[in-house]
Image (cartoon, rainbow, N blue to C red; front, side, top):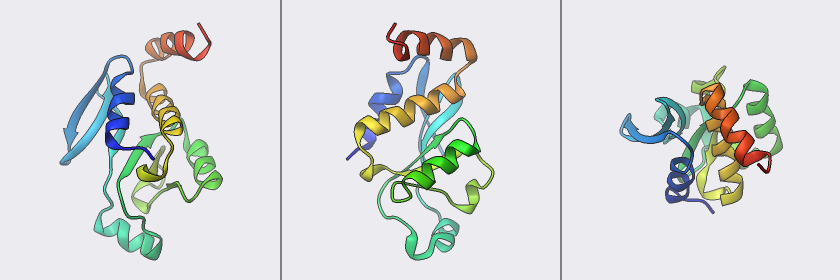
Amino acid sequence: MASWDDVRRIALGLPETSEQPAWGTATWRVRDKMFAWERPLRPGDLRALGDAAPEGPILAVRVEHLGAKEALIADDPALFFTTPHFDGHASVLVRLGEVAVDELEELIVEAWLARAPQRLAKEYADTHLSGG
């Protein structure tokens, strides 16, 4: 089970990442582009989700495109979900207490890659993802 400490450690381990507060919660950004953030459910979310509303900490992460979001939710709806607030937005909500740390790392790295400047993302991918 992952924690906010895991999120923080993974996110801040990525190049040019900072942690900044926004909306009274933590966000993680690469060159001021948000790629992951704490996202407690709001009253509108709770109404929309009804009995399916999860309890516990919720992490939002950017994804490359809406197809990736839909695939994550279809693959594991017990872990990934969305709310009407995020309709049409390339991000997905994650039940933080249910995700394994290795899967969390993959999600955060993919979110970072989706938001990092192209040259920075390529340098990271060439060094860390290609066995370089």
